[in-house]
Image (cartoon, rainbow, N blue to C red; front, top):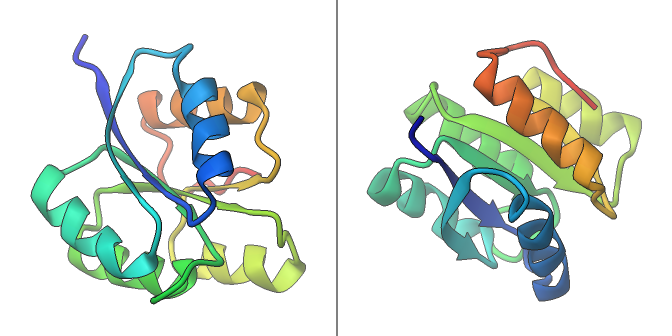
Length: 129
């Protein structure tokens, strides 16, 4: 089985490190890390990741704007939103824009596993928190 290609987009280095640590227990290849919303779409275009873990609060474009652009340009990319701001509005807007899931910070390996399993099982459009 081919490794799942993952892109991490979070402006906080410690959060990216924690996510990388959780992902290291799975058969994935982290193809890129970005720390601002402006770089995400270009990296997706260049690297064609299978999964994007996308923070909502980032410099440049926020994650919700990036999500909308990703779904318009690369509808097949699996996007798991990540945020410490798990307000109803953020979750609802993520769902409306086509996110495949929402992971609340701080991450747990269990939640990351659920997103990886959801991707592997081909579960698109069924939002998971």
